[in-house]
Image 1 (tube, one colour):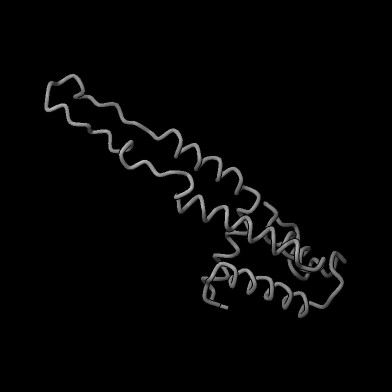
Image 2: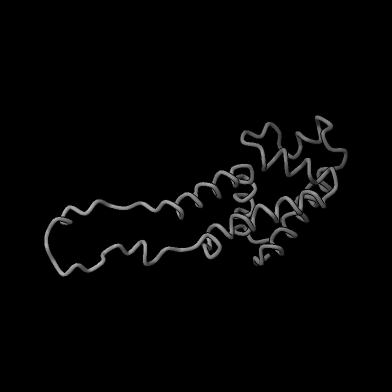
Length: 139
């Protein structure tokens, strides 16, 4: 797997629990756009409308960033629900936690997973490859 793909998936997993907050923040940005005050608003002119944000308003359904956040959250939750307990533990402990306490070897040594290091590494790689397929990324 390409390093850039691996790191991209790792970043998506790290933001998994914050995704709902990001979605809400983006929806608020779309509903209540920032408007700069017009210092020259009292000057008489051609009465042209300079409010570009109203003209270029993006609906929530059409916003790409919002759609990709929702897609990423859906893909991660679907894959986590479909995987076995060992893989879910590996992904949860190594990538989803804000401050991970264990390494892959630490999970094995503390008996949180019951497999060899090679098997654990293969499980992690298989999960990342499935996620890359779902995201349509190069492996």
